Image 1 (tube, rainbow, N blue to C red):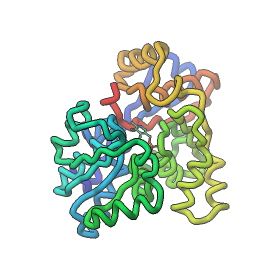
Image 2 (image 1 turned 30 degrees about the vertical axis):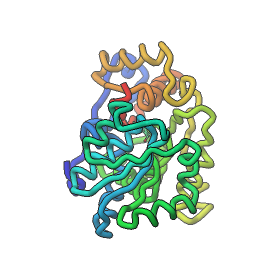
Image 3 (image 1 turned 120 degrees about the vertical axis):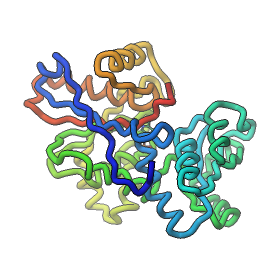
Image 4 (image 1 turned 90 degrees about the vertical axis):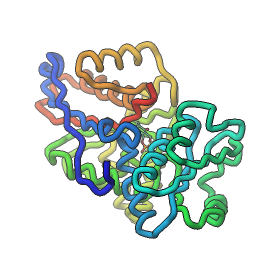
Length: 300
Ligand SMILES: Cc1ncc(COP(=O)(O)O)c(C=O)c1O
């Protein structure tokens, strides 16, 4: 994998008797297949962050994550691939690299892991704390948890270069909102963005507002864009990392029926929201619907 390649991931068309009856054209953008470790939206969110670090001749990237963070592994793997160093600030001072497979793999990939107390980790986005890390590691480019910055959004916006402009609905799982904000920024006029937050009680619109403002610097433009967002906030299945037997059955069925692997933390919930939405609509009048597979298959 090269960060300079323009290779796109494949677009899988999903067919079934039920979809025929609903009169809908359903496609899945298989970003999960981009790379095993720099998978899905991680690849898109890291692309310009890596390029930024290289352009400014930084030694590496310093970033943040929890013990099971997909973003930490992806950062470690991407940096290793392009010859940059990486530092991961990990939530939980009691942990070590041996605590789980994720952290072990980060270390194998050359990431220096720094374990900090949860109370300190919770302050990670405070200006003063960011400045302290920067002062400690001046030769590292600091990327927030989940790749949630301007470069992350720009990388996700690029997905439209690889998609037909005729798509009318896009569905995506939401954590930090970086991926969905990027998609929204590049979206064609007659398209709606359906977001599925995996956190219970997450304030989608105000988080997106904040993110989009860092890009557009125009409150009116942000408000206009947000009118194209449909929030599906009843598909968290109990909250982050939680699952039910209904969700597990649904995930197994998708693998069997459509050859579509999904994880239970992000993509399983988002795809379930899509299917429920389709079923609630009845005749979809031949509309084109896209599901963005954001990866995360190591989540099981
Ligand atoms: C597999 C997967 N899908 C979706 C998301 C949500 O993306 P974002 O944090 O950009 O909203 C994440 C988190 O990065 C993820 O790991």
